[in-house]
Image (cartoon, rainbow, N blue to C red; front, top):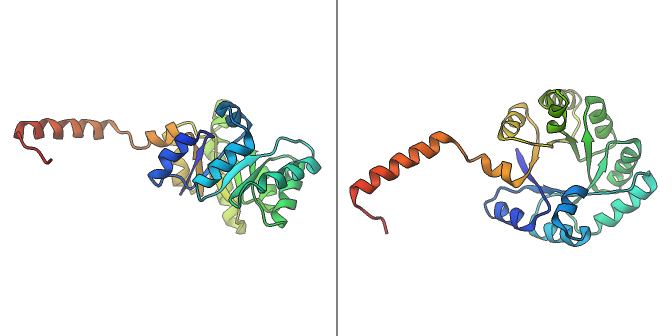
Length: 217
């Protein structure tokens, strides 16, 4: 499974990237706002930092304008994945840019039918939103499982990018189901290392070590 980091904060990306935990980055208008940076500037900096795909999202709503924005974003770096919403205009943009050889991440997916359309339009990634489905009392993991089944049934090459990850359980469940990628905030990725029994075991080891009176260095 590939790990994408869902942030536009350079320091957070760099920290995880140094540990080999970054296969790509996803951004969106809300994350750009939170960073307080210019979209072209911060996206270029992220692309220079990581080798994998960096999703940069269009903000237009009409296909012609989306395509123009997508082409502009694609000029930032070779590893840009243009991010478009799952609307008919977004699908048209996906088809056009994909045929031009550009990676495209189709976002805001909430149904299997939408995921099928994105795959047929040539999407590189489909981004089903787990947490937002959970918020309305639907199981986001059911969507990941259904998309996995359908894509496998027909050999679609579009990668399932599990998004709106809210917890470490979302990550583990996505991995079990077979999502190709998860994108999560840095805090969630860091929490994957946490376990109370690890903490308890380390505490016991350190207590016993102190009793030996020895030093390694």
